[in-house]
Length: 366
Image (cartoon, rainbow, N blue to C red; front, side, top):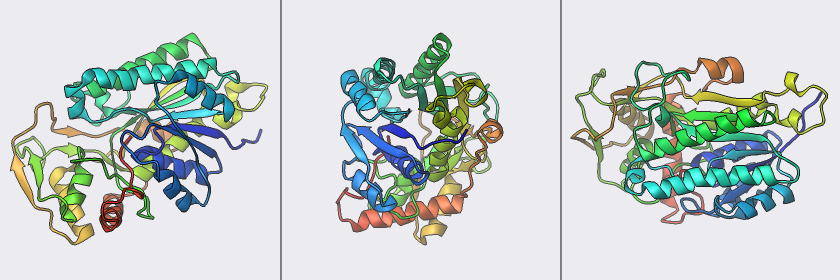
C-alpha cells in the first residue's frame, strides 16, 4: 500500500528545533500546522519558513495547556500526527522555577494527550521531543537507550515524567504509535541562514554563546572547568546538527507508519509500529568545549575569547550517545560534521546580527 501525505501538527513549531523540522516535513510533501504561544520564539518565523519552502504554514496561537483549543485544532485541520516540541527547556532556570516547568511541560503534555483522545477522528501518532538529560550522570559510555534514567534537574525530570506517562498510555491503548526521541546537543542552522538558534537574553547553550562572542555581541565565553577527566580537561558532549535532528523526526514518523496508519488498512501490525519506541538522536561522537571553540574559530575566522571558570554544580565530564538503535530501526544516522555545524551557525549569526535587532528572521529554542 502506498503512503500519503499527512497533516502534521507541531506544538512549539516556531522554536529552534520545531522550525527546522517544519522545513523538512514540508519538503517531504506533508502539510504542516504550527501551534505555539511564542513565549520563546517569534510569530514572524512562519513567514520565514514560507520563504524557505515556498509554501504557506498555517499557525494557531495558543497555550499547550488549552485542551479545548488543541482539540478544535486537531479536528478542524484533521491532524494525522503530532510532533510535540512545546515546553520550557533551560536547565538552570528549571531549578529556579520548577513548578512552572512541571506546569508547562507535564501538564501541557497531559492536555495534548487529552485533546488527542477526545478528537473525533482519533489521531494516535505522536513523536515526543525528549532529552538525553533523562539519563543523568552517565554510568557508562556511549549511552544507549537501556542506560538507567536518573535525571538530575527539574527540566530533565519533566521529560522523564512525560516518558512514563506515554509508556503507561501506550500500554493502556494498543492503537497508539509513539516515538520518544532523546536529543543530545542540537547545534547549527538551516543552510539558508534564515533560521537558527538565537535565544532571548544570554544564551544557555554553548554554540549560540560562542557565536555571539565571535560576532562581538558578547565579550567572552566562560568555560566552566578545565580539570575534568577528558583529553583537554573540558567537558565533552555529543553535538548534533539541527537539520540531522529534524530529519530524525521524519524518520520516526515513517517508522511509526503514520502515513499508512492514516489509511484504512487490513493488517496494520505489519505496516505500522504501535506502542512506545525510544531512540537516541546524536552523532555518537564527543567534542570538548575547547574543540568546539577551535572549530568555530576556524569556521568564522574570528577569535573567541574565553575565560576558565570554576565547574558548575551538576555538570559532568563526558556524555555522548550510542546511535545503533536509530540506525538499525529508523534507518537514520547523522550526516553533517562539526565543520558544517559551525559554518551554518556562523552564517546564521551573521544574518541575525545584520538584522540590527530585528527578530523577524530568527528563532529561539523550543
